[in-house]
Image (cartoon, rainbow, N blue to C red):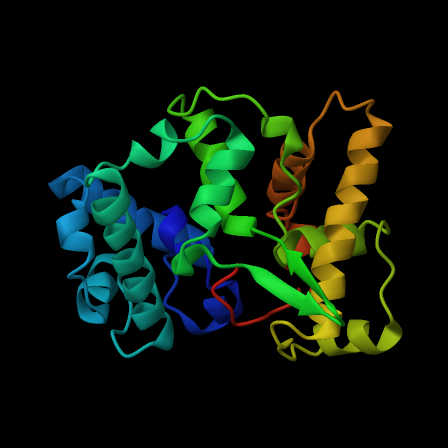
Length: 243
């Protein structure tokens, strides 16, 4: 699921299961397929096409997101075959820490997440960090350093921080978000929104004396964002494979 954990900018256009968000719809489809037929082996991943992915997820095969999902899963399978002997946990076995695990995955095209802001590169590594954190939470990556991960910069955490008054946005950006306009991935406003959310979560972690890590605070904020108050207000939307 981490391999296709993106598409939030497309959620208003996909078929959602009753009572499910866009993410939950995709996760449910993938889970049901695995429960019925087992996981795709890496050899199968490299041969997946948009039609197969769409059938599993209950979506229109012509939807642009299905081709992006297929490409991401093909890339995942390719790296597992070429670098890790076709073993999913091979990527864990070559890492000595959670940040190193995230950095290894972040090299892959399917997990690429580095933006440019003026003359600097901004490596968010949102999905790569989540993949590493999820493997640890599942007991599959008993590695140190999860407290070194940052918040997982997406569109929901900034949305929660904005509605809770932690982030104050430029009125022009607020108006764009409230009207449902898409943000451009890599634009100054989109990079600033993600980066300020990461920075704010670091301050929140400091406020707890680091009893809570940025990753733990991110999880709490993400789940908070599933509440009715946050769902009732337009959130930032951007069509990107980063989140």
